[in-house]
Length: 142
Length: 122
Length: 127
Image (cartoon, rainbow over all chains, first blue to last red; front, top):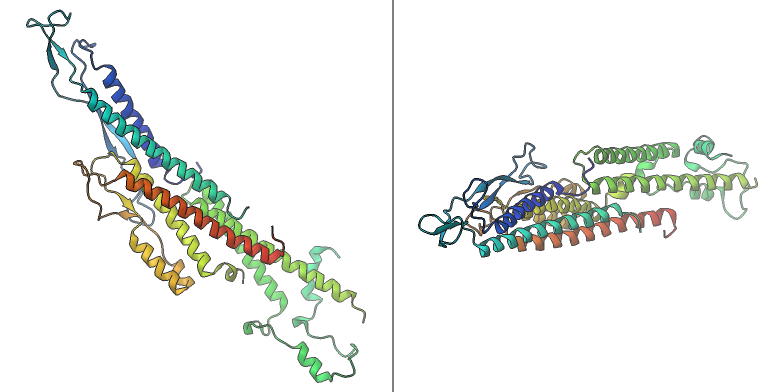
């Protein structure tokens, strides 16, 4: 395909990766109170791990190359569930304690803000690339 | 005369655009020697001494052709997805276009001066 | 003869700078894309290239200017701001992005102006 926008590979990969991250965070927030999932256990917090995409090609004229990013894996957080005393709850055990997902809403919101800031920064990069390409196309014309 | 054959002017105009020989009437007050000296003023670039105009025009045509093929290569590079930066292709195309325009204008001026020469009453 | 038209120091320097600007945009895009990647070190067109280009322009030697090639390297002077070893500062990158785009606008205007002036000189018409 014609490469008209410079650096579009890195930016596109980052937009996809940040979008996945935001999806995972929203899922965490939505399931913050799920005490009884499909496997019978409370919902376990998930997080994404980013990694660089291994590039085969060497950078232009030697030196470093632009790196794309991708989601390496979505892994489950291994923090134990919180126990809350609620004997009337259907999932309460013998002591009346309910295992509730150990998700801190403030932490998730902070992560969401960081992720969406990164997403918007990448959108700004694309916008600038587009401006530059349009200017290039109008060289010599008035 | 059609423009295409106008390009073969070099065969009609004498080399170096030297003055026509003895048939031309000379103004009585100016000696013949001075007239000849006036006519033999050389171009500023000394390397053009002895070069015919046809050589000059051929060289310019070749250079313009080189520019056009460089531009075509650059555009091909962009279209085929090789990592040719867009600005390089655009600049190459514009430079080729300017060079071509120069050649066309030179040709126009040559035609004009030839036609004016032919209109001159002997 | 045709080459002499385009071998003016300022025009050749402008074209070189456009190459560097396009390359820098790639580097900035990579940095912003990897702002959350652990152990990512930021890359950029090194300032040594900018200095070389500046001194080459001062000499007004076309051969010297056109022999330079811009390139991207890892920025060794960047310090990791977070524990995961990532050296990208988002605000710095966004500022560089804006500056780079404006620089590109300038270079496009200069190159465009040179070409249009050439056309004007050749055809005698202003458009």
